[in-house]
Length: 611
Image (cartoon, rainbow, N blue to C red):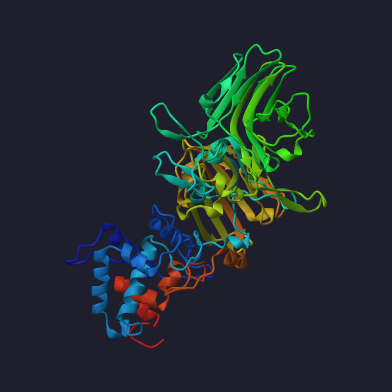
């Protein structure tokens, strides 16, 4: 059959892209309908696929291949159409015989024509209800995954667990969730605590609030809140110095250091008195030990004017099983909370806090200090093995963390500690293909010629490991789970590095750079496969699959759909461009687009006669 002459509208300003689309659609619709079980001939399918490729993720072709690009609503499809093209469709509809438009009505015809054009030009097929138009719940779809531990330099109260500040400035809050990440799942039978902090990296105001509601007059005569974590409020022996520094989160730190101590040297805070309920009071202290020389200890004493006192000690030769031992000299970011009634000695009032360096030199840093609260600080919950049943898991509240401690989730950290910034908040994440934005995934079906299976499923996913000043990723090896028998995997290929997004039409451009991992998928169904992708932050990990599937598996892979005017995008007999062209509204559209389509519609009995 002679190809239709190039379509040239008269008196209508259309875009070059739309005119090219119309020419291609007319040529395709006018071709001889030589359909086998798998649709048009190989030559027709290849030509159509080559000419319809675009820079979008759509891979529209014949009935053996469908787009998995997420479909917009009809209104969005219409909005994206070129205005002149819509006008042309409108004019064409008015010029058609009543028999053509009467079955649907003029408005329905316009919707059908516009949506058909939009889906073929590259806006997307109608009907997918998953971001990729795929049913990941089927567990047949590859889901390459990259584990990582994310360290977020600053988490603010208004930020969620996976959010970090981008390089665009303080107002640019980015979520790892938008880049395909989720909180990493844990093993079924082992404790799972994917979120971690250090107590001294939490800029909590309660750390520095002692003594509460007490003020002093500064050198300018202004009233200021008094805090025991400020060096100016302490008096010292000549062998002891106190100085101010700060934590990673910007909270105050009182540094206490000695030089030349052989017996004892002290630092004293006296701007506070508690004269009732002493036994119910908690001594709460957050500290890091920089060093304690051999034979030395550090004591924190609560003293009354009468001379009575109670004390806790950091003793390298002690054991924390002792009631008054709160550290053994190697603590970093430790929180200790001791009810004073548990300590020996009589004490009916607190008039002074004294820190004594005894026996040898030492340096410690205090980032939290309070001696007036009756309740303990809690630092969230963690999952543990039940001490009464080793086969069960339970949770416990954390009260005395040391170093970096792990929680079940970010939300279990009490609001008290989420009201101020947190530095170096860490969270175990997994970047999964199923959670990627639609632009990073491409897929399609082709007839599985020369193979015993019905369909060849091609799938490509681009996992990107984001880079930002406030984000650090410790990246593990990519992995996937084998979902089909080894014979179903025609190809599994990897590309790792700083490359552009790769879609199905681009795979050939990277043929020499792809790493073949097909043979790894012979471990057995449901086995985890190490993809050996040694990726780093800032890399993109592109994984390309070619799988052989049955028609039933192909149906399961595709996302269920509500249909719309054309029904869902699909494989043979269930959607796709050629199925659309041969449907009632599709043939009306081809009639609009040229005499070849009009002839095809007439031949099928839709126009000018009963079916």
